[in-house]
Image 1: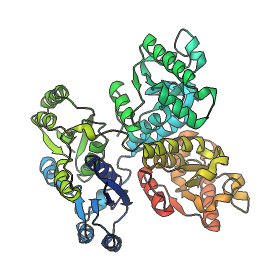
Image 2 (image 1 turned 90 degrees about the horizontal axis):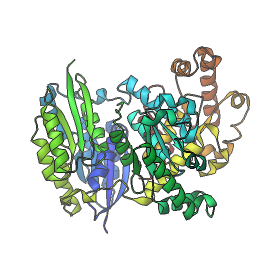
Image 3 (image 1 turned 30 degrees about the vertical axis):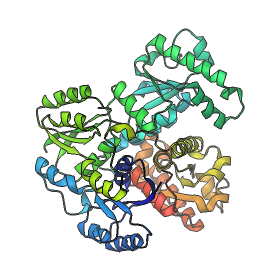
Image 4 (image 1 turned 45 degrees about the horizontal axis):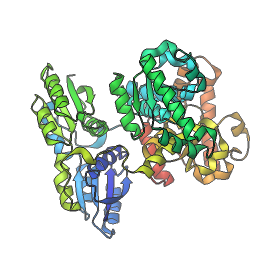
Length: 268
Length: 268
């Protein structure tokens, strides 16, 4: 398989170039890539340094760019490579529809564009940390969603992604032996049935994940994993808790599914 | 200020459409937007339902779309609105450069494209959670970066973002009274000087943040905030710890700056 050199270049963090660039590259399944991100290229000096770097590469790179300043952009584009400006194709149609020509410089950019929604994200992260893994259950009343599932099913990363990306207050509660033996919902979450969202996972995958954490333990045993997953799903069905199989899904996919199925609003 | 209706539409999570869409909209500073995300629009039935929804809107929406299947895309684009296909302008040039035409369907997409790098991200989240706020200092040897700073300077969200977005193992250690009185670096981090990265913050901003957490407390007092910030910066300078003022930066900006200044590799 050929390996191509790819640059994500930005006058800001580079996140937009990385996200769209990776999505586009995923379409080219036969090509392996070696990627480099160059954020904060916001001066002619930095543009020239980058152009010089691109010129020394053994192969022509693919350059995904979100540089606002035209002069900076042109300096970079003078270097060898396929230069794709990720903003340019859309600014004209948007200006026509929104009746407001884009400003000439990068002054409009700022990491914190909307302080209230930014603060909601940071507060949601604090909430997710405080209520991770069953902690501070007295705060569940403030949760928009409470993820439930057995240990290592993927609750924590999903909650943190929901918080960081969407400002959603997501708590998580681990299901364990006591919860399976009881008739009702676990006491800590019983009052919040409508906000529960369950995760399940293929027992073999769970076994692998637990083996990484505690090799050879009873906790990681396949039989124990099978039992817990069966009991968790039984609990979801008995109490009408919506749930999702997390075995082959990324945290981005899980978060999008939870938002959609739980009807949650993105605070961003 | 006019308010426009904006849709982010995808046959997958919608993250790419949201990220590029928000970046583009930020250029149009005079326009307020009401945004809606429609993920997993991957069938004609869902496309038709969305088109019907778009047709009922009082104003013509702006639709940022990353739908791969042409038929699905065309059904949506038949509805009123400005439809911007975020992939289309780049696929031709990329196909020419990479010598591999894109597949016709969405089959190439999957949330977990590279299992090893995905696992690195999930492991990094587990690491950031385990080592948050000074916990499990015995694991600092596995950290790629150890963020230090006073309480509420922004260490935890930055570490979690570094983990989730880039798979970087980031621990964080809170600086407190004992650390300021000592001569050397705090004992827990002294052996890892080269991996330390400090955050600082304007005392007034810190005071506001702490007031939200514990109103009227000594912890939140402006004088106390001024003292702690001064001491933290003195510690950074004395021991040559690189540091960044987090007062007006988003977590995305902080993460990008930390990666760049600490020379860390993105595992993604």
